[in-house]
Length: 234
Ligand SMILES: [Zn+2]
Image (cartoon, rainbow, N blue to C red; front, side, top):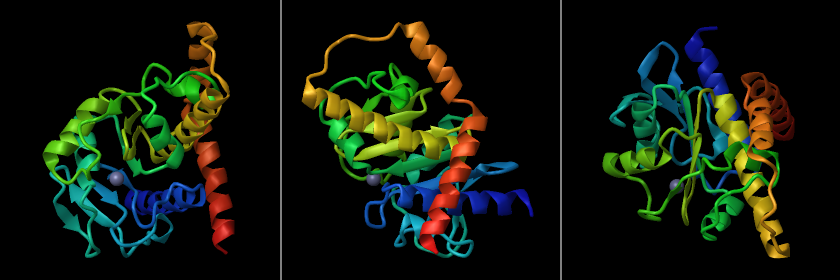
């Protein structure tokens, strides 16, 4: 198997996981992976199919201007979220854009995400919010604005729209996407119940963050979720 074959398999598995975990919004939401050994290109889910319907045949490949370089399926107009994050962040090898309900609801609170659970510990103090528009990101200019708002972080909340995740690997992007949604859900629940301002010491939160953000953890959990999604599709 070539490195490109493996990346395509990972893209298909990532789509199946995201759909199985409720990250789909009709056929919206997309995932991409930088082509191994060819950093100026990335493979991506096509338009008009669900996250769980990516196949080797319908995968599309783009350059960092968002111009199609391979594939015949229809292209997502929001591919500029991906192209501009890949351009701005050489350390990023996978991007996800999705519309998860709790993250969107949380984006409307104006609150900072706090370390109320383990996922919150990963993102606390490092989750910017993009507020320039709730419209689709359909141009290189707006893609650049999202990438600029993301900065050096792993995720950006897009107020009234969704999330964009930037991972060193697709395993990281997928697992963190699910952890962010759960952290947003927990903060919404705690806020509704009456959230106080007590907090664990920053060093304690940082120690947990370090343990949760190791590639081995991402790989174990990605593989587990991939098995679970495949079994559900049978
Ligand atoms: Zn969107």
